[in-house]
Length: 378
Image (cartoon, rainbow, N blue to C red; front, side, top):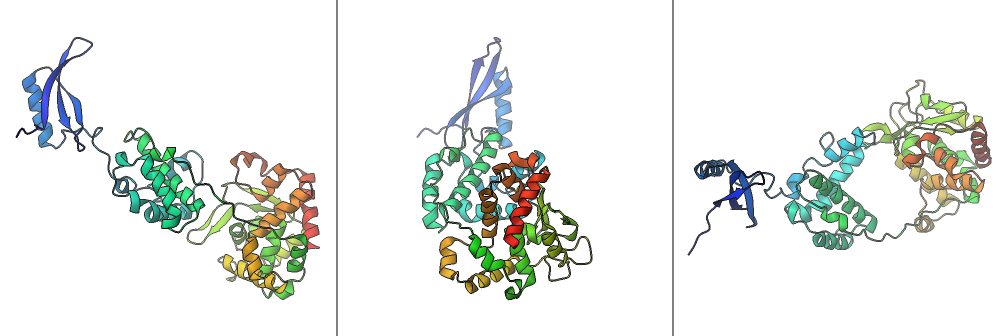
């Protein structure tokens, strides 16, 4: 039986006319590779290759098989270590720690069980496509969630391409699943009137005011929870933060600040809840020390909805939630003829192209918004 040697030497003549010794060797997949020794004499070339063998460096690191996806993805979505997140922040983008944590959990739960032990160079488009098609059923997740997992895998493999570990991103050629839009309804004007006309029946002034504020400004629940006394001004609210359950104050979803006009009545309503200190939270059960739970907002709203005749079955079918106040306000702005540009500026649309408009509403634009607020409050 003939055994294959670990390497073989051969001479190659370069374009310059210089003769250099190369060696053939075989990588982990049995593929023959060719590497220069840089030597012009065979004896020196042989000595060089034997030394490489002693150091376990016969296959150069640039040619060796890539590590497994599990090994390569160790720093991904670890705060302070993830190359993707750090690059995005350095380029002026935003990325919250909680979102980073959530993506790390998704990686460990939905991606690594399938691809973790596979070498990056061996992950094919066919493998990724089959995994994506099966994911909704196997993992019992929505198509939207499955597509998000595909996006995470693409991000990891994009970094592998950038590091010259692979030539192409095998996940980049996979088509996302077709998503079925979730029905998310908004409250009608009649429903909003029933829900907001009598704060005394809510049994919770803070929750009532949170719903009123969302209906009149379109603020997100996290932004409302993050409101402090110093953010409230007689004619506007300065929205600069959101509240994260684990990490506290953070930037808004879009990473941008915005100014929302408010009426004097809404201003006074908010100031009636204000604690004694400027940095105290408006919606708080601890005298401004910490924000109250967003779940309290939702539960109080659901209880009030049942009182005005919106059953739990109807609420679920229509997709009504605390966030529906945001849709309601957006609808009121559009119905009143407020331009899409101003609407996006007020409600804080995450389109980064709108950044320049967020803090530059004209006086007549602010007046339009206040008129709508007056109609909602009355």
